[in-house]
Amino acid sequence: MNKLAINGGLKLRTIPFPAYNTIGIEEEEAVLRVLRSGKLSTFLGTWHDDFYGGPEVRALESEWATYFGAKHAISVNSATSGLYATVGACGISPGDEVIVSAYTMSASATAALVYGAIPIFADIEEDYYCLDVKSIESKITARTKAIIVVDIFGQPYDAPAINALAKKHNLFVIEDTAQAPGAMFGDKFAGTLGNIGIYSLNYHKHIHSGEGGIIVTDDDVLADKIRLIRNHAEAVLSARGIKDKSELINMVGYNYRMTEIEAAIARCQLKKLPDLLTQRLANTHYLNEKLSQIPCIKATKIRHNAKHVFYVHPLQFDSSLAGMHRNRFIDAVKAELPPTLLREESTVLLSYGYVKPLYLQPLYQERIAFGRDGYPFSLSDVTYPAGLCPVTEEMHFHRLVTHEFMRPGMTKADMDDVADAFQKVWDNREELL
Image (tube, rainbow, N blue to C red; front, side):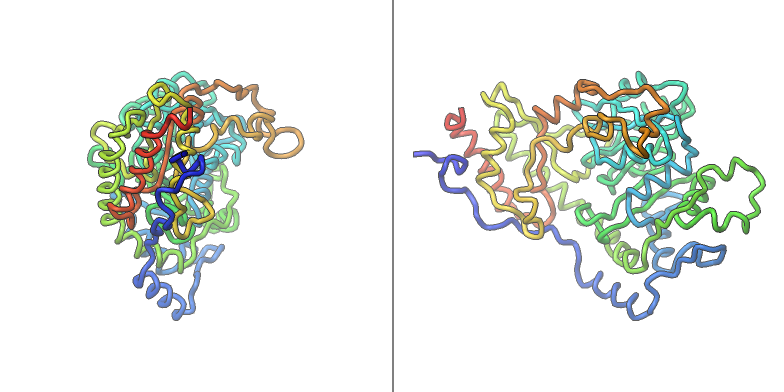
């Protein structure tokens, strides 16, 4: 008689896992405060004091800058908008090249395309999954203008090495910190390690306001340009008395503005971040200890002198020890477990790999972005063949496992069920062979 649920046996657990819900009475009261004020937004797209937004937006920006130790914090309606505004502020132009990660959310690469630049994909580190400095170096050309690094899964990028390389070649370092609020390298927060950093307040991040993003920088010029791009730059430039034509580069503005309600919620969420991180790290440590008992599972490595904040919990799978491919094993573990409340549509929050390497998407394979003529790929002979980033492909298709069972709200009993599901499959793996 089969014991594994994937083969018809009884599931180890059927009761859904608890939701990750950071919204409470504080956020409810903040929203009511804004609603009662009658001011859901006070942004104006003309040269006026309200060009910079309302009281909640400005308070959030001040509090965020103080918390993370940045000179400027600029709110936007999403981290994607933040990436786009940042690339624009850096003066990226058609035909320029921007080095990006192949293993991240799509906007980390398409931010270059928005301004007509060409994404150049570099490979990731085998142990930490962030951009590998040696791969970056091999991709630099005379057309390279910036590097978009990603603090993937909550792990800070190799700031000393990559920043030194960028300085050598006079490149901007744009830090996508969507998955790493509160992570640190040395005594500096992730997001403040490069020239400019972008945080996410999307609903499934560490803290959230439904949607939203925050950009931080110590550079006065970059901050000014981002605020312009956020809010219809072209409509206010004449009032600012622009004299140098170079100041007009990419100053075609958008509406990337955050609402007062989102800002009020985000202010409450920021106060909760330290406690949420403490719980998340404790849970990750507990699961690392439990899962280390499974011979084919390799625990996460944390970069020296860094603090990892675990957006997800990445693990590596050893097929040679399991006697089967990762996907077969993980499918069996998933069959033993239930979905999570508020995330039922995602089934079980356990995956093999993360996202398909970006350069394998049709956008890059067909080299078509804007218009029928393939702009901006038509400006370059760069191609994106399979095998371009071998470590990325090895991790995605064969070795990497990610899950979200270490989120705050999970009890030790909940996490024991997760570990027991792995153990059950390991103990009965002969059913899968």
